[in-house]
Image (cartoon, rainbow, N blue to C red; front, side, top):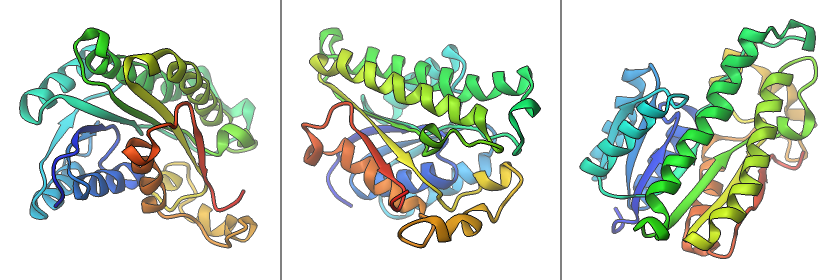
Length: 251
């Protein structure tokens, strides 16, 4: 285990890209907050794996769409792990595949509340605590978007794609606003990655179906995305601000 890199909050970290990022961040020396909404067992498993390797981590249940829950999460993290120096806005939901006309307003609100409002709320709280003008020591934020923000995901998830497009726009503006305060904001845009999210959409084998259309001829692994996230947070990327990094195998 390396020396401490700081304290990182990773939303939606009980599975998939979030879990991979949590494990990799701990290996790089971060103290890790494994945020989750409902899956206690999966979050605790990630924490136990980190602790078994000599790292520091806690699991914190919080629905990121609610300001009070997010503020309480950051308070607990700072009490138990120290000042937050990094945020990975990874939490996101996906509804079953369908056409544009299948998307009702209730579904749209659910997607927007988690994927857009949640990212805003978590980033706002991070900025309040990291900003040098507010007594913080600076830090980094990486937002996890999707290749769907470019493709629009027709016939499948136009609502999800729209939510990720909003995250792209938020990143562009926020990065320029808070860079003078010592906070670097960037974005990764994963392609077709092997995670449980595809099962949430009703097609667990979706990545295999689409793999032949990817120039690298394979779907991505969560670790592929985690490495990109942690590079953007590292000193090796200390002049990267407002970057959108595609991790898509070439699509």
